[in-house]
Length: 446
Image (cartoon, one colour):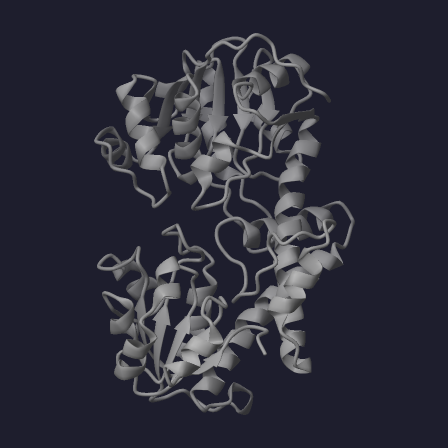
């Protein structure tokens, strides 16, 4: 539906959940002039936020939060009920973790709806901002048990590392709801932004979110498969990307080979697409293939690193005694998010085969005890890239942090025991690596 904005007025907004999506939504809506109360069940998190401490690494978020609090347009409270009583619009930004069968767990959404149902003012609008399965707006309506309250879907399209920019400069805003007046009210929140606002039904809005992430995951899996083919036939994936990316129908976005996609969205949403389709009688075989290619890509990186160390995983040769210097642990640069990180998945395989791993990541220096305990019991940490490379048989770049593109390759070569560098992000110039006396292996590079 084409949307013509009504005269803009600031709204009183409550946001339930102070995680990645909730905190970004709260801060950015407040920066646009709305009066926002953000609630979370964690008292310690709320106290830190009140003190100006931002619990996640996200460019620009701290500045937006501090400015909004200082302008008295953003406040933090403990508990959803405390936030929503006077709100015109309430955003639900709570986790939707994945069950073993790939379906989304809606227990947090339902719990939040039960808490706020009795205290919502008449005429309030509840907005599903969390990524939820098709039909979740109906689920929230049933739990609220309020005929005088409308439920609208407003999926987020935020990239970790650029979330503030994405919120304030979106490609589009999607609003889904069966109550047109409620959908327009939510759309008007965004009318100060210079962007397209699409109003549709709730089921279509919920499907758009999953379809968008599924398509982007497909592009990455596709180029990773092409990179594997390039290695087999002797082509260079950089030239292939230039050739196909210049076609405006394809574009260059998300055509960068790497160790596989990860994070909090793509893995969960891709599996959910398969699960939702299956629940409605459709076998989404193409999406299953996208997931399988991603799993295979991680194993290809394991085999690549093992070969660089003179071992062959196909022959079941253990990696005992092999020292790996790992650069990057987060699933992507610009964030401290370790969820579904391809780096950790690859290092898990290497550690299980007996490799000794020393790792460095800019965001986790000195604070990685949780990962050591929960994910990699044998992982050793370094305070910088040279510390990770010291004594290594193989150095492997796993996350595309900009500082890794500026490595002092001569210094790396001096401190290594071996001479192999595996660049799973294709960040380095192969010639420069070889000039430093190191063997170079990228992804799909000739």
